[in-house]
Image 1: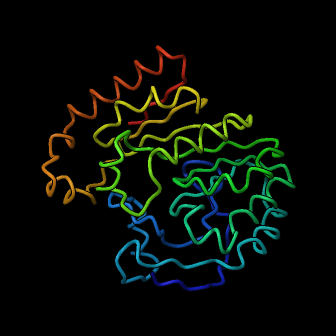
Image 2: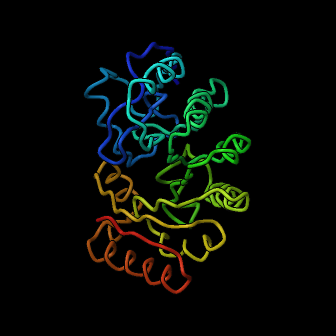
Length: 247
């Protein structure tokens, strides 16, 4: 893993998903095979394979403290093109520092991660007035997870993290994206863990080689995506869980 400490020029950026986004890191140690953020290499100049480098924006909190004074208060997404709780966060605590600033100023925050490391920050999350925490969970089958997300936390770890966050009174969601084999079995595992569920096929074709290597091509079809998304919607309706399919 190539780790570089850098000084960013800005940290609170405009986003098409939420008004603002904060990415404390460039690159991601989770190295998921399908990750759409691979496109970032076109703009950052990195030649290394995705998942082998991370740039650490060591001045993230300092920048944020200055920038929120100049911008209109609105929801901040943490994060869009990196995982804010990838393993390096345990050492650098950039996400935690940014959250402390945002919560102190009462800014709304939506966190999206794959990591149970988010539980480390339970103390500040419980005190926040407007925060949602989501974990991306793509399948109920951890063997499938290992094929597509070999460096990411296990599925049981993610679900247990959501359960604990939900138990502590924090608004939670699961992001089922992309829809991998085994995703249709997720909803029954999430009944005590989430307030709502988002579903997106997010088929960017970066992981096509994985499907072909393990003869999983049938799970790349429109029929599969339509059938599983409909089953997820039906299961959510049956269990009284809010669900949005965004493709």
